[in-house]
Image (cartoon, rainbow, N blue to C red; front, side, top):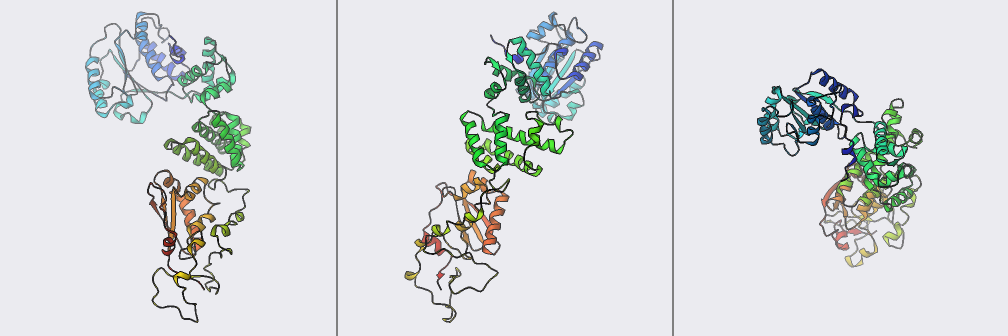
Length: 541
């Protein structure tokens, strides 16, 4: 039966453990001199050797012929502990045995002397998962255990372990393994297994392991099906984009070339690449570039090493732009976990990064070209007048005057204004494509003026009648949005401030925004004549 590489090449002695020299030397010295603690606490991230060292220590304290603090792995005690036949060495998973009854049973058994070895050893993995009553039940025996008893606790989250437990244990912190250490070990394992692993692939696997030797061996196991494990094979097996293609997308983003960025992503999507992995690689690229700029001397020790320093220094972006790029990617990564359409979310992210209005202003689009289609939108013979400017209060005779929504009790004098036309003689509503509220600004017109200032995702939501509708009443914009994605996309302080500022500038008066939830049936269809009537009668002069 095939055995996974991380199990087959698990270290058997302290000397086999890589990347933790200080801890292994300390434990070897304690075993050799007999100055052992009754309780140990091993702290560190996954795959750094905590449980492995706990098993080696359990064998070493019971070994019949230890070799310089290491177990011999040949005596009956070592072989019995290795195959699990000796019941005096117990390994528990606190994630599934975290109740107070489990700890009480352990405590009742621990007082008995071992039957086949010198010390009874309890290895409790993920000890932070114990409940508070279980911790309290463990306290007394952990503080004053019998001479034959030893506890070895392991955890990845030190902050969840009670201080009363910490004060009774000898703590050892396991550090993350660097990429070179993992790559060297992977090359050794590949040589032993007859796997053709190239040097660049070993370095790439070392970086992808994220400091854990077990993760690195698992990745090597996954990639070993091909004849030659090179960098391309690793990227293909992991579903990653690769540094060159990620760098190409980053260049398109920084150049404001949305079309090129989306085209590159479409190619990756067709190749089966994971959108979440792509955003993670982009985030890593911008993060390395920012760290190298903020810490030019010590930055080499902080970067991941996936990209050369010349590539990171050549990125055409300021420090502030890199910060905004990273914040935007993190925002879309959070949305990626919530939405059911990762492709769309990644496309929205790339569009925003490359010039959707949040990160960098568009470099090629001329804003004056956007209002050109307004005469066609209004669908009237002559172009509509510009919105009235409040600084010139004297109205011209040819400009329309909008009455207040409240009924007027007395008509204006004949010498000041012409009489109001009867309802049958007014301009039909069908001749205008948007409603004109009091103040001379409609939501449709304001939205056309906002087109260059809002992110593409927000524009899609606001212009989609199935997701939103809006109307202006006096000094307030009532914006109705579908709950969920549409509302979350628009309900952002920066977006609402831009809309409010534009409306206030167009109307000349401060505007407020009120958000309401739209019914699931989409935008409510209002009769255009009734909709216009909400803002009072129109007087033509």
